[in-house]
Image 1 (cartoon, rainbow, N blue to C red):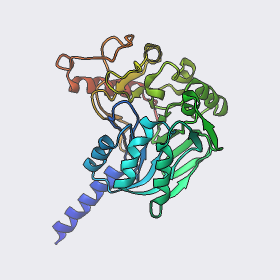
Image 2: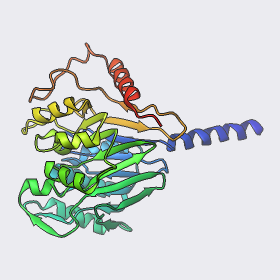
Image 3: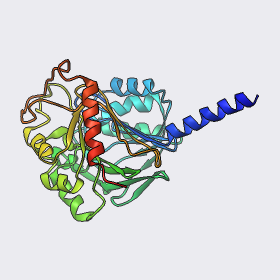
Image 4: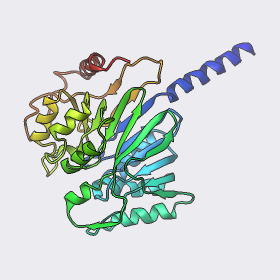
Length: 319
């Protein structure tokens, strides 16, 4: 009986240690965004859902998800909201976070808002810039930008600049999630927040478009790792040369979702500061405007992972 009790205790301790880390998944949904977060307290959040329902649905089912504690729509563009329709039809959702931006050239965003309103027990929230979201008592989730006043727009740039921008901070490391915010909003964020932008990881704005990720913004954020959610052979030419050049000049290791879903782990306090990144840094000519194509037989995944981890360990600030 004592052995059984000890075994159960060990399993519970292992489970608690696993939950005490923060996991982020940048899901391969093609040309669009979908980010799934698992918090140390056992809750979760999905930020955007990509351009269609099946990729994000299959990812969540594969993770064993039945309930989403939070679903976030950064802004009403179809490559961010369409996949969320299937999410609402397939999973229980507790809270829905939205902006008040109205894309008058789209109907799907309103359909999504109707689904959120019809979800039993689901609350719709419009977070204010500067506020902190109480998602986990040990994790700081700060809203850096959002459109909280009702506004109607046709212009794509205006809609992008209504993106709900979040910074997630845990155990000395930040993850900056920028939606499709462009350099105008980046400048506004820098004016409004003189400190607190430094982040180990950044999800690059607008799929690596040249209109986002300014050199000044990167200098303030100082990311070690940049992750670009982008689709193969997309018609926009994302990621653009200018953004890639700026990332390279800033010393960030660049990852994309072209090779599949990217994931990272921030460990619990007192569990070491090794930053775990599951993915492959993008090699080749980063100045090319074409979608990078790499021969991974020449550059094995394991070697790439070790190089990325070594860089993170060398550059991580002392605690």
